[in-house]
Length: 214
Image 1 (cartoon, rainbow, N blue to C red):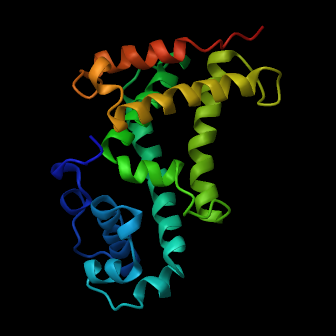
Image 2 (image 1 turned 60 degrees about the vertical axis):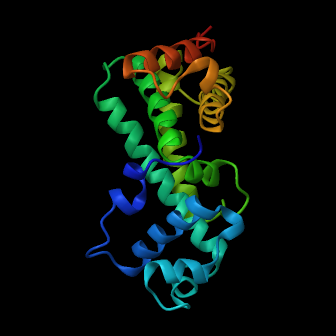
């Protein structure tokens, strides 16, 4: 369940030609992380996979945490792209747009479960890193904007806004974790569902949150 399909692997979906060395190192890092997990992750292994000198990862990223931080930050940029792609095909109503964000969130988790866990569950990325903080806040701010529109709030400082925001995020994130862990696939069959069926599930989850402006 947590294995990514060959067609979606970075080795297949991202050609290596004409890439600079830091990009090659990030691609190699993601491949090794998918194959071996954090336990089998090392800068030397990344350098070998990228066809670089053994000191190249440290030169560009400092240490293994620096490389994993950059990879996780890149993951947030990619997550944002998946969510925005979902939004572009959804109706232009607040609830439909919020539902599209949830769909994109779960889509990304299914496509990149190892990277998803690095971004959200691992302690290895340095969350105070400026690039990581900026990338993760872009995802958070987009969610906050859509929850604000659904709830009719004008500011994140308004009473009851933050509980509504965190409830929406928590429920969709929990669904994503249950799906990629395999715990929800038996009863829910989410991966095998059509886009329309998936949308209904996300809408039902988001609909459990009280977004009222009262």
